[in-house]
Length: 314
Image 1: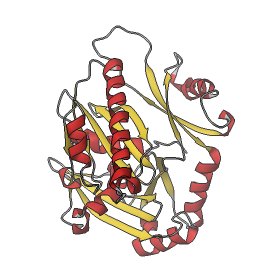
Image 2: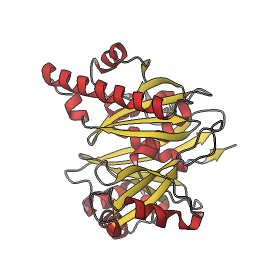
Image 3: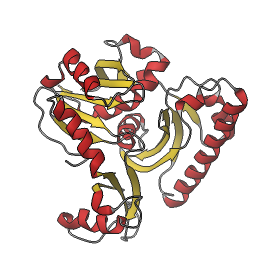
Image 4: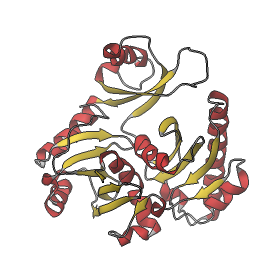
């Protein structure tokens, strides 16, 4: 199974993700000339969300067997690496990328499931080599996720990654001709992405979790704020040097519930910083619980992954 596989829809899509404190499920439907309508957002608390019993309970409650299903890897279950695009035919691309990854992974390349994602080049630049993203996960991780769904008698079709889930949301909030940076936090840490014309150009992990952001000790919180600011500045500077033809308009901060973070970033970054809410992207009228900041933070990436499978209603 490839990470980004697409197939024809049967009864629609539901995306299921496994958090540290439970299981999230989401279904959306995008209307033309309007927002994506969230039809389902369900959270099932669980001490071990990846236990078969957790998924089986959700499957029964939500009738998951009636849908095609996608899921998402956690931040520590894969590596997203930037490599030079090999000059080979398309059918040889993954093999060539696998060879280039052999000294970059923290495990043996023969034990890896690999997929690739192109990084667009400057349309006004001279023709030359360019970079691409390579996604690599241990075969054992992929097989365990497939087995989890199989044990619950559910058909798993797509395995996604958080970087692309966030890309999906960012792409809907871009201003024509300008790049957009987006920052979110969850139990695995911070995730910074930059998109341009709906494509992912940069993705960086920041080693600060949502729990650390919500730390009541102001001194510890200040250390986190400083670390985030430094990582953002370095990443934005690097991006500006590498992709000088992309003008990043602003940084959008996804819902966190962390008091003072937005104000601190806005005061310490040269890039304008704005706080966003799910209501900026989605119609939440069918799921009023998602108006709460805590729930928006919890479902942010799950809903981003669900955007991959939306139906277009004419």
